[in-house]
Image (cartoon, rainbow, N blue to C red; front, side):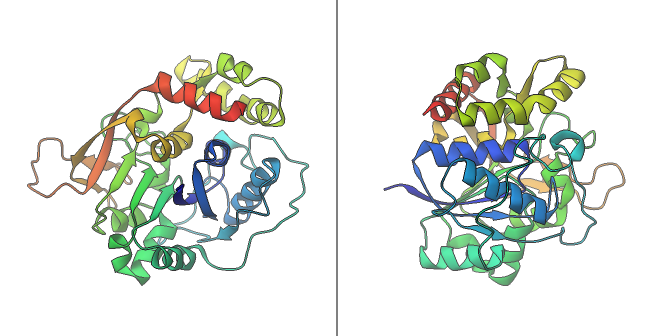
Length: 310
């Protein structure tokens, strides 16, 4: 039986690749894709999500549900420099949205689906955690009703990607992240920059995809992203941050995890959004997160390419 999954996104370039991996794998029962303010506005993230599902010709099978249009307490922080004004690196700009978002509100949808399938639903979050935090605020016991939560966010040993210490998803809504981290999920997996930065999609991988609508989309949507990555890191590639979170849902053996106590800074001039991992148990608190510490990047990239080639 395929794993029941809700994928929560703020669809920019790498969220879109995560959606493609999830759909093309054929191994997940996607109950819906929920959207949230993040890389781009809620409206744009929703339109982008609809376009990706149209590209994959599954727009009639997988509903898109809109969620929060702003962080819990803060002003939105968009990432247009990386993802482009419309979020997909300039790709699919002329594609109309044939099937708009379904009725409903993402936090309520998450609650309803988890209650309908207790202990069966995996939440894969590749965006700021606002939708999940709102769901928990309404139904705290949700934390004990889901099967697992896998979220792309944070960095525990390396540097940030929006400030010197903070990863983007955590920085945008750290208050939401704190609610999620302290909710008491029995299985909460952090897929952070420490591992996602090792999953680098390069020209050779893209060429291996062949000449298909998906491969052409991947080439076009990542072109600017890859140029920026080269300017900052002198590597001609781009990191598959969000697709790796989807990859962990599909192939958990690709990563090594270790249970630690993790918290997030919300009241610091310099360190807002920093994920603090207590490696030495200095705080004497029970571990609350399975932190991805290692990844078989070569195996993941091979898996990613093979799935997108099908």
